[in-house]
Image (tube, rainbow, N blue to C red):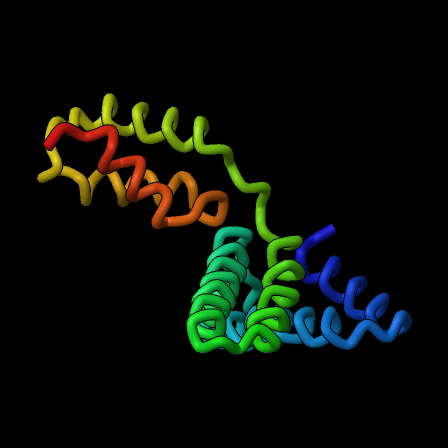
Length: 152
């Protein structure tokens, strides 16, 4: 089942159960995917690759996390909870996150492959790491691990 089919099925289920928060989150995901699809459309036909779908979902999740942080800082727990609920729905469609150990192993493998030996080469290591871990790991966490693995 493709992501689009899964979202459509979940949308119908949410309509039946009357879960408005979940319904709004699914509609948001669906709209973002459709918007991306329209933006790449050529000759009236377009479909998103799995990588493009993941990009859209990662972007939506990041926006929700940023909003949660802002609302929490502004003592708006009610709005932070709403964003948290939407984030939980978005995360259902993201690939399974990897563990910290898996991130470390991936980063060490990239460092060995690229021959990076100092912080000056962090950009090259980060670029490759984010390509491999896209949607599976938080960029901030990956950056922290890359910094810890590269000698100063």
